[in-house]
Length: 113
Length: 117
Image (cartoon, rainbow over all chains, first blue to last red; front, side):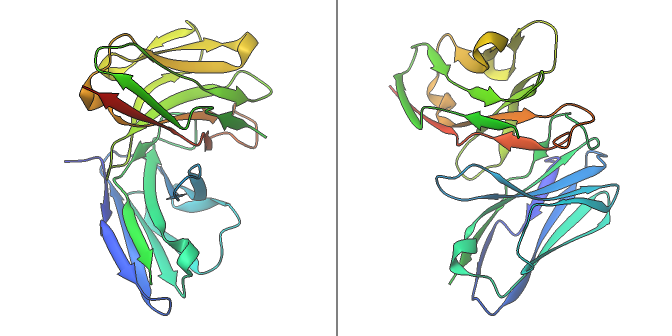
């Protein structure tokens, strides 16, 4: 069983659709993260949650809406996305908001038509 | 603000040859440093980390990295590369406790490693 599981692995959606990405961690961690990975660009931190509370929003457009109902689950709700939002979205978790290593899921490959 | 530079976008080596991937960081204090590897279609896997102490750190899969404060570098090395090492490698830096970047990683652009038989 992988420590951090992301679903779906692939998602194709139109610009007017609404969809959600899900992340679940089985490591007992308290901090969870969303990253965006685009081609030829460094990983971009999007959101950070610690004990279910959002501690970081890295100037992410409002068409991305995160939700963290508990320390094990993290969602990214998507609506009215743009073609430039096509990317690999990675979820990660760590024991707490510290410099302990983050554990990553395999990501959701998102394509916007 | 902290930053990471990986000067080599793409490196090709022959199987069995030695490998060194470069990483330079910018940070005002002693950083927390990490190397991650990403295989196609997968997430990032931690290879090794440096927090303090011995500047030569050992990681998984036979990798090691050396922290050199004077050069602001944290280069990744492996004495003999295997075909399965072909992947993309990311260097990352985390800030110290009390700083605004604590708990947040800044990643380099990545280095793609190709291994020839």
